Length: 173
Image (cartoon, rainbow, N blue to C red; front, side):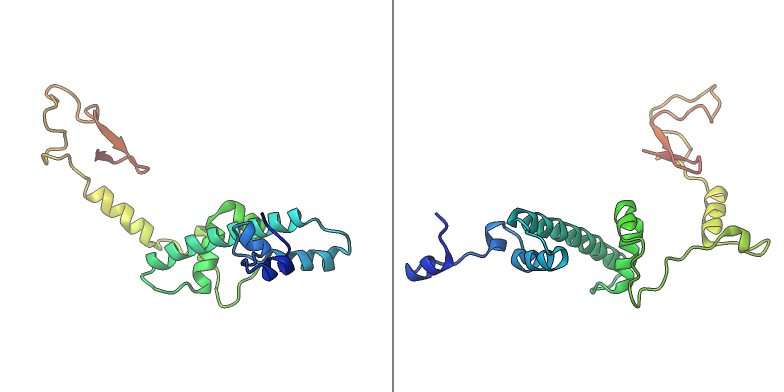
């Protein structure tokens, strides 16, 4: 049975905070006080526990994906740029934090193709041209699955057991 802090201390039992009882890391009491100051109304403890849980969840999601972003960039620390990329990639979090600017994070790179000079090739265009120049082949090197009979058929129809990527290139599965 949970007892008031004065009684628990007198009996030698450990004290438990509201955050500990709710199994949260974020401070429930501090959020409760800030809610009271902001609204100037009576706030139930359940509301501050709920808000603490929501804030903790959002923070953990953002930091988890920012950690993955920093690993992808081969860095050991999460910097503001990783936070920005994480927030802008997630549609719901981006909508929630639409008007938030993160200092020292820069901007998400995005160039409108209409602004590029004619004949300008991007890295995406170069990779696409490489894929078209060197199409992938099946496992036996002849463009078909081993064990499948493709004699007398059009090679474009022999796509059993394959999936097609977004550029329409046949990939072996």
